Length: 215
Length: 215
Image 1 (tube, one colour):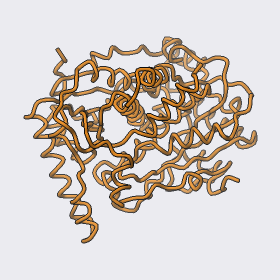
Image 2 (spheres, chains in turn blue, orange; image 1 turned 120 degrees about the vertical axis):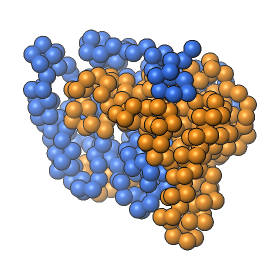
Image 3 (cartoon, each protein chain N blue to C red; image 1 turned 90 degrees about the horizontal axis):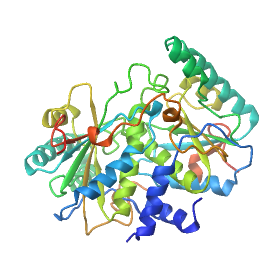
Image 4 (cartoon, rainbow over the protein chains, first blue to last red; image 1 turned 90 degrees about the vertical axis):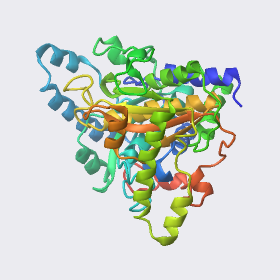
């Protein structure tokens, strides 16, 4: 059902997709944003609960408050790193909220679908995992559309709830910056910065039971 | 950088991908499985922690024990549904572990990358969300390769730990059945079975703050 060209297009997207922190001020059309959100909305979800919402933030006023929350958390976290690692950490550009034309807050509503969502009853965190799958669809769509996306996970959830008036039972699981960039990274930023290395895939695969190396 | 055809190929994959529960016994080549796992391994991860492992199960003996764990949980969960909904629930085929040639247990190691993984320090569950993004890459790759995949989330994690000898600190977040099928669903199985409806995307989007409808 998929031609070789179609398969290659998917893999190209999977291998090229990067977390981006540097954005151009160029506007993004609402039509393109809707393509990303529709891709997200067609992600899988446990018990088909579709627990996601998307808050589109494009005003400077709200973006500045989100950037403030992220920067506050960044400074707090820096304290937990040892001396050299702390300088290294503080030199990393970890978000581009004020630069990117859009920040999309993706939330998870754990109450959606009622008290006994099929599958979520056994493993409750399948709700946020569903949201993560939706985000990955969005990320691949952004890459194919020539857009850059960055997933910001530096914030206290209650700060984001306050800023975006999110009810207490709703989980603001991600802040996604979306825009164009002239710095689309070839490799993960943290790999280039020597923060972490890519692991060898074969070391991560086991056969039949944990620890039993393949071949 | 992406042609219109390439974009369409990605969207085709995103829109066609389904959770599958019915498999043919036809074998799947190890080469194809490796393509899926490499796609997973190129998913995003918080602090580039790459917290995943993949346990490939293909022997009948181990698959039967996993199917037993899933069926036990299914019967236990059925008790929580009310009468009509219980019959409806029990009539659903919720897993195809014994049918599919492969079951892949995907795990999350929350200790990988040390005590202060960048980003995970603020939102600890970004580790399992990273694993979910990897799974979504795998799922799209499976779809493009003409394979079917089903995400089983009916089990007690300690049963799966016992069966696959997984250490207590490692989280077995998903059991994925992978194989060929002659029943690739056009719509989500739970939609066809009238268990849940697809929500309208516009109702899930807010502008600037929660509850503030777009347009």
